[in-house]
Each structure stands twice: as C-alpha cells, then as structure tokens.
Image 1 (spheres, rainbow, N blue to C red):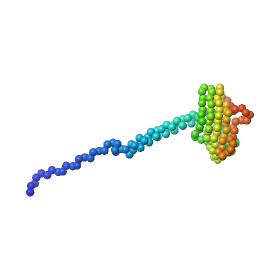
Image 2 (tube, one colour):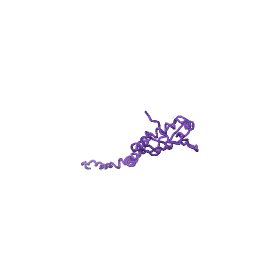
Image 3 (cartoon, rainbow, N blue to C red):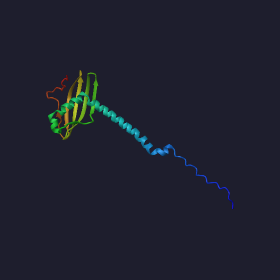
Image 4 (spheres, one colour):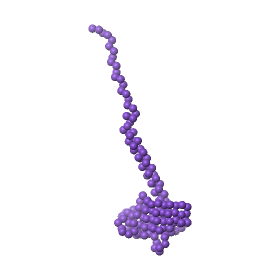
Length: 159
C-alpha cells in the first residue's frame, strides 16, 4: 500500500453570473411599455386641465354661471347647491376687443343634472349674448335665461 499524495478535488468552475437584462427583465419591460403611456396620459390630462381652467376663467363662463345659479327656475328644478361640472366643451376665440364664445357647461344640483348653453359675441370689448339657456335632464324644453325684449343681453359694467 502506498501512502502517496492525493490532491484534493478541484471545486466546480464558478457559474457565469447572468447579465443585467436577464436579472431585471421582470420590471424593465413593463416600465418601458407603461412609462410612455403614463407620460402621454399625464400630458393629455394637463392640456385638458389647462384648457378647462382657461374657459372657466372667461367672462362668458363666469356670466353664464352667475345667471344660471341665481335663477329661481333653475334652482327649483335642480335643487341646491348648484355645482359646475368639470368638463366644459366648446370654444372661445378672442382677438383684442372682439371675439366669440360657444360653450356647453355641465351644471349639477342635488336633484338633477343640466347643461348650460352659451353663445356670445364680443365687439368693442363688450360681450353680447345670443343664447343663454339651461337644458335640464328629462325636461323637453330649455329654460331661457336671457331677458325678454328681443335684444341680446349685455352684462352690467363693473366699477
């Protein structure tokens, strides 16, 4: 019998470490796909919010809401408190002292919903209203908020 030197067995070769993508693909792929979609949604939402706030700060919007919320016929049909809806549709074009507005404004009361319609023109810096009506959900006729007499309404001058 021989008592010679027996080398210890070599350890197995180290496993190759997986690359970065194979370790991280489970969160990388959804981020790459959903990230641009989320950014696009945020951009569109920001633009809509900006346009809506610009419309809500306009004189035709402010005048229409003041007239509609203080009209006894509207408050009786909708119930109080009256709250404007978020999504105003239509257009406002202003160029110096002239312009035009065509808006549809959602209006909610405790009892029902409605839509306020405004058509106005601006000439010489003064808005005149051709249409200022409230269409109440479920009612066949609109409530005309313009004063009777056949002339378009002009808001009182603020001092």
